[in-house]
Image (cartoon, rainbow, N blue to C red; front, side, top):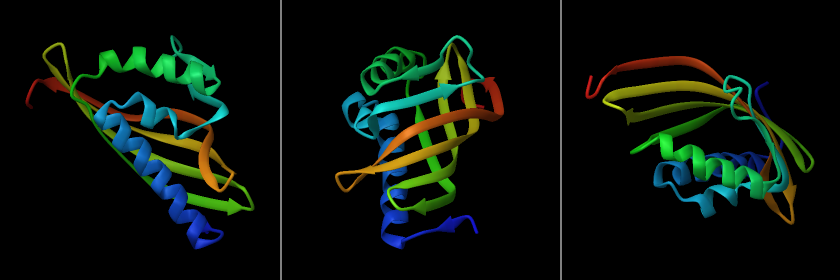
Length: 142
């Protein structure tokens, strides 16, 4: 079963994912970083130049720099699976991104494999690992 555990925890984790997506679209580094645990790890194996970053402060700094390459981004995410056991959960989520870059409209879709932790009653990302599923690049506006 892809959705297991207490409904209130699954809802809170879904809202964590939605808060993350909203902060990306608004390019709000503080709100975005607040979704991560202090000792979190973010892995981007399809982007070897970025690799894996550890610690909320380092993750935030890397994201601020990376976001310079995604002007006008529209970022959406939704869960495919949330499994809660106590104060730990695993989630698989899918993403869709649209942005313009150097006269090209980019449409990227991917999947995150996540571990979430509940700290002081708040769900946060402990680990996130992103892989590309589909990329479509076309002349701007197409």
